[in-house]
Amino acid sequence: MRQQPSMLIPIVFEAGNSAQRSMANWRSNKPIIERNQCTNCLICWIFCPEPAIFMDESGNVQIDYEHCKGCGICAEECPRKAIKMVMESV
Ligand code: SF4
Ligand code: SF4
Image (cartoon, rainbow, N blue to C red):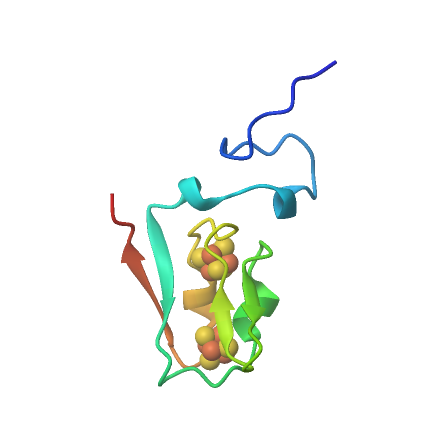
């Protein structure tokens, strides 16, 4: 029987299981939403390849950093340029 890796090890053995795994240590850069620029249009959510963008109870789009792998697609696709990629602190 194959050993299950720890939730902290960023390995995806099977398709579609990233929602159960932390992607946090894949990142070298992370997205930061500029609140005053964001219109909560959810276009970033459409393009994000991970389950890493959600809307909070107040209707504001947020990043789930446990599932964000830092690819930067959201920053590229945001029509308001409201997402900045910043270097991950060590
Ligand atoms: S695409 Fe940009 S403006 Fe739209 S919700 Fe995402 S961060 Fe906000
Ligand atoms: S950096 Fe990539 S994984 Fe993270 S929220 Fe943006 S599109 Fe999703």
